Image 1 (cartoon, rainbow, N blue to C red):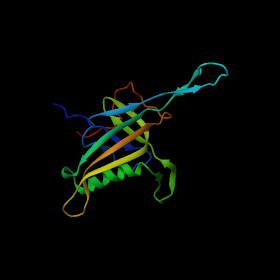
Image 2: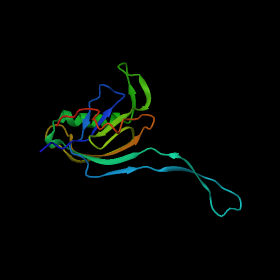
Image 3: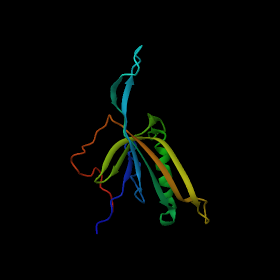
Image 4: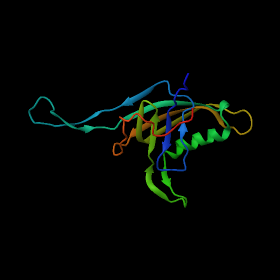
Length: 167
C-alpha cells in the first residue's frame, strides 16, 4: 500500500527555511471564497442594484496537530519557528528586512491543491508540556489560516508535484 501523501508548507521568500510537512494531515479544512460586489444607492428605488466587482482570494483554514512524543525537541522548535516566522517580515543575512510584511507561503497537498499564500493569522494551543528536561510543548495544535496571493499562479492542469516529499 502506498504511503499517504502529506500536505506541506514552504516559505518561498526565505530559501533557508525548511519545508514543513504535516505530521498528520488535517481531518477537515474550510475553504472560503466570495464574490466582491458593489451596492449602489439609487434614490426612490426600493432595492440596491448590485454590480460585480471581482472575486476575493481563497482563504483556507485548517488545524494541524503535532505530537512531540514522536519527534525530537529540535524538530518541535523548528515547527514553532516556522509558523512564527510567517507572521513577520523577511530579513537577509545582515538582519535588514528585505520584505515589509510576511513572506509568501507555498501550500501543497499533493494530488489536490497548490496555492501561493500569506499567513494572516496564527493560533497555537499547547495541550501538553514535557515533564522532563526543558518545559517544551510536546503536544499542540496550530490553527492555520492561509490567504491566496492571486498575483502568483501555478499550473493546476499539469498534475505534477512542485516539490517532492519524502514518504
